[in-house]
Image (spheres, rainbow, N blue to C red):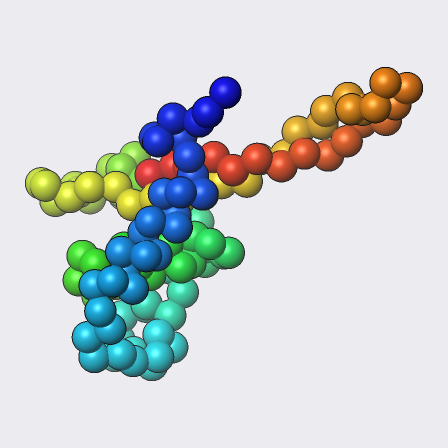
Length: 123
């Protein structure tokens, strides 16, 4: 069973990184050197927590590709709860959420539960 293109999180993240590389470097600057805007680490608008792992890279690539000066991100509903409105024509950026679940042992005689992780895309 093959995953649909929409649900293949790994391919989507990889493609976003490749697109950013192929777009060229422009004037490169270290992300931690900035002028006022918080682009050093993408941060969630609702929780104030910085994104981690591949989400950092994915959101950096999205910010660069769209010319965003701020590193503050949120879902449509998070912005709506703050009284903000997403600009017309804007599209969601890719995020990855890791979920954990317990699976019964794969072995014929295994009674142990195994911890499994899977990646789920969100916008």
